[in-house]
Image (cartoon, rainbow, N blue to C red; front, side, top):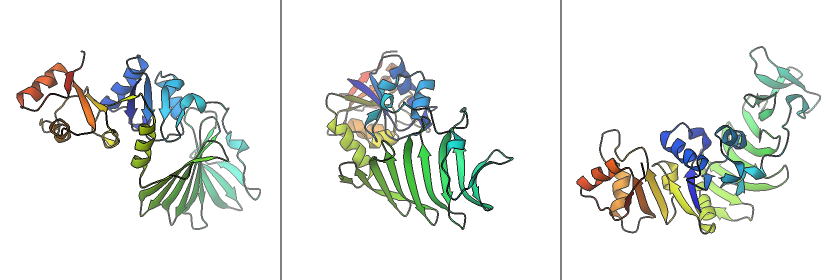
Amino acid sequence: MRVGLINTFDEQTDSAVAWQIEQVRTGNLDELWLASPHEDACQIAIDLGLELHQVYDLYSQTYLAEQVDGEGLWFYDLPVPNQAQLVVNQDWSKSIVSSGRVLADVRWFANSNRLVQAVTWLTAAGQVDRKDIYQRNGRLFAKQYFHNGQLLQSDFYLDAKKILVQDFYFQGLRNLVIDQRGQQYPSAENYLKAVMMAKKNYQIQISRFGREFDLAIPGTTLVLPTGVLDEQQEIIPALKEVLLQKNHVITKVLVRPADYAILESAGLPLNKVDQLDE
């Protein structure tokens, strides 16, 4: 089974990412894998014309089709403490207010009927204390915990009770990931690679030198629909590295015919390189 790996739907306007998405939408790839979890992934996938059973969230290890059920958490159904009030301000910002103090800021999903996307709880000093993030179907997606405004921990949920993955941060850097079995990883990249390595009989394809390149596991195919030259019109250094290293995890490179000619004229080894069908 052939799959396209992208980092996040937030980068969908990037031409290489858009190309990957189109390959899945048109049936040239079987599935799209997301490296970064996104609370609105289901709606974004639908808007992009993708089938939810074709989009796999690596972080939660579930297909989006398993995440879609539910009607959403309506703003005025949001539980509030201490008889607090739900307030829509004149500038359309939303708050939870008690005795004149803003306890939390609330964000709605765009193009929704007041469905809650996130609730950011504040300390008495007005700093972020905790953030509750919801999916458009109303399911709890994640809880994030802060100290002095700095993110310390993110817990990702399957439902309101079961934590799937926990991220821990130190000095702004994610330095520990714990999965639902209690297995620890020194980074999100290590965790994601372990998830992909455990899935057999999948041919993974990436299309750019972004985070996806850092996530490549042995046997990954690199497809370069947007070209092999950088902004200085030089062959991308990372591509040279792929072609020159015999034991690189990327074992196949696909380029357009014109780019194949560029690599050939540069005298680079082409044993890994094939041409894309135009």
